[in-house]
Image (cartoon, rainbow, N blue to C red; front, side):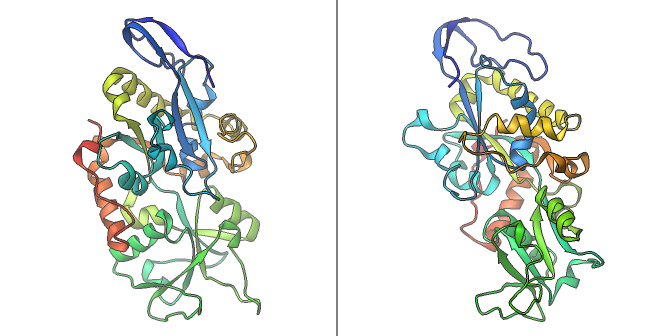
Length: 345
């Protein structure tokens, strides 16, 4: 826990690049603990890695990165605790989860999107993908088939009028549809059945794991789900939300924090993989864990495929609503359309 601060503060000072973010602005005696920022490990953590690299004991902000693979309730619990003091002041999370948990705009507002998709199709070297229709009759191993990755792939196929089905326990595959097979993790790329046959023709995996698997198993990246779904803009995947009370009482601070997120993303392009991993590891919420990110993989090419950029909520509101509508078409319980008050102006 960082220190508490007490004092009379009548104005925010000019902030150095990625330097001290003041916890509050007030003209009366105040005591305030650090504002807590939570995010999942992986691409969302990359978006704020520059801020974590510049983090100091007295900047009024503490960053907490969660490994959520084994406990999907871990991140949502930081927004829904009955004790408000235990909830995140700011949080990065998948846009569909944000829409369901806090999309009414009563307690949290979306400041912006920080990632815009990092999903790619892999295939054995030599295999190509001319268009989505060539996937008909083929099998795709899909990571997190019932969460954003799988929902996004299904929504993309729907947009292109490509029929699909999930392959059940019977393993029955259709010749006239794309067959989607759930896989437990990226390590399943290249897996075979008891007879030595590949379980899937293609695999959909998120970066940076996509690059790791392609290098280790002689697979190639043959499809960009972001481009297939929405062209150059991809889709709003992970968003940054803040307590409405923070936004309303610290408007100037909120604007400056968002500016630092933009600068943090710029920092990625000059930082080494080692610097990025060191910054993330220093802010793991559970000190017995380390990030899944691997320094050698964090090249500019791979980072470029992680879809990391900041887009203000007011600028991507229509994209968010359109994407969530597509997810709801796939699964009515996958998301909710947020209230207008959810989007920070």
